[in-house]
Image (cartoon, rainbow, N blue to C red; front, side, top):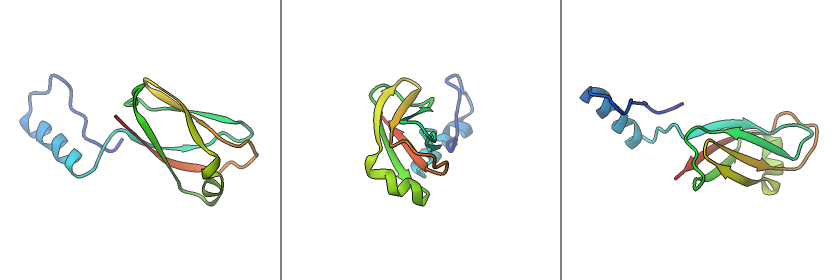
Length: 102
């Protein structure tokens, strides 16, 4: 996780301010990395800050991920997870960064 998480009952103004500064600096806990499941057509991703109305974006980080990027799509979004549908092959290095907004 990339952002500063404060508890709902946090009373420290310093911690609250740091969390706000982190958001302004672009840090968020709604990001991650996923490697597509080899020899399968879907990969489920646990994303604790993802909601059913979130918009999920992928960015390929390997050559094999980039080669299949146009054939990958987000087929389901629920509270706490999303599903990527993708081509099935034996490659084990199709890695993406993801962000879930909203």
